[in-house]
Length: 232
Ligand SMILES: Nc1ncnc2c1ncn2[C@@H]1O[C@H](COP(=O)(O)OP(=O)(O)OP(=O)(O)O)[C@@H](O)[C@H]1O
Ligand SMILES: [Mg+2]
Image (cartoon, rainbow, N blue to C red; front, side, top):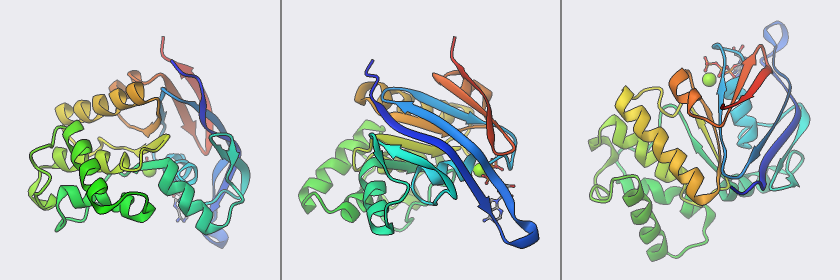
């Protein structure tokens, strides 16, 4: 296994909300994600899991602390630079996939590639086809995503997250709205990609079976990681 560090954060703090409803959502979170490793974040509702993922995914900014992706500090970059890093280095999978439902599976997977603008049209189409093939949807690329099942839509979301070949994949309850069989299938797919392609995966999950399959489990409570354990 390759032990390059893909992402680190140190002492991340985040306040959310206004005035009396202000919440200290993250109270000094540090972690390291190495290439080829799968990490679970677990903890009760409201403990800060999604807030942490959004900050690591450069979708939100920390009030204190630092984040480095591939050894480059990114916390203080201007918005356009952050957006560029996010597009190129991070794949995000949300609990509800947010596919454009009138667009085909293939067009959905091409959206991040269009944003990055590195490939010509044909190159983007070919890559989307390969990614859909890898998630078992090789024959369904032309279908509007609203005509796919929930499990298939989540697999399109996985392919979309991989579109720009990110180093880090962040997933917020990626299997939360799937049945057991489809959750395990989506998880195995991600696990395989991490192992084969040396990516780092951090996923929020309420499913103890899935957390048990991860290399590391980070347990959060009230804005902090209170326990981090490696799989036996
Ligand atoms: N935009 C916001 N404004 C104010 N408070 C917020 C905002 N977003 C989240 N919070 C609060 O910050 C805390 C952490 O929220 P977060 O969404 O990170 O929790 P979570 O661990 O992902 O929970 P769940 O398991 O329910 O998804 C909670 O107390 C939440 O109410
Ligand atoms: Mg959440």
